[in-house]
Image (cartoon, rainbow, N blue to C red; front, side, top):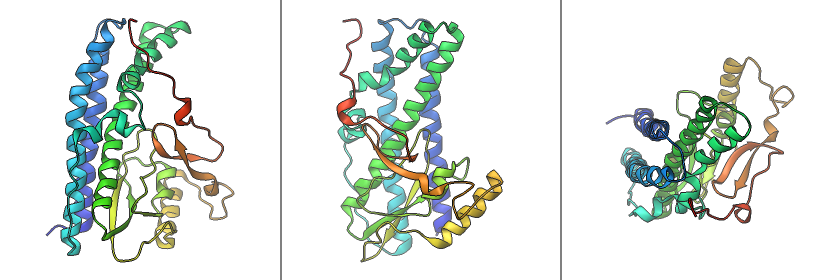
Length: 274
């Protein structure tokens, strides 16, 4: 039987590939449109929805499968949640945001860049990066939602910890990985986040507490990567790392002082060509 770390590594690798594929595929489709007029938007959105529906479903199945395998390893029971396609739609994952609005944003980025006297090449580069970010985030949101639904279906899962991807990880994720979260809490993410989750089985809710042993290891990792660390929070102010509720993405890792829109700040859906 594979170990916990082997299961986690395999899950992170497969999920990471899905995240990469989603971003790359949508970006290439956008760049290959040839023209980016209003008439091109619905075709792009329809094709992207088809692709993303399949990828998000795979990501959700991987997440629940990982939870099931960890349960087997721990000798625990696991009941897989029945995750429907509706639960993985853009609207469901993004707090009611309309898919047309979300998937049209790269076109807005393109036109905004052109209005700022950027060249077409520069504008396309900016828009393509936004496409990639949106679609990568969609897959991460699907993974996160599947984890929450899995924990909600199984009362013997009392919490979870953040699992770093093993590739590139930001300082926010390093510090957040020292936390233990309630089973009913969504994992805080950020742009291009690909962190996973490790469920905690037991009979007592662990709450949100600092794991000092893991925190020491994190500080050592940050010192190794960034050349500086400070438990007194002088050189790197870890105390300013916090969680904000984003109007669309839910809990987001950020630095104190950053502001996000709330649900009521989201603009109304625009009908292209109307």
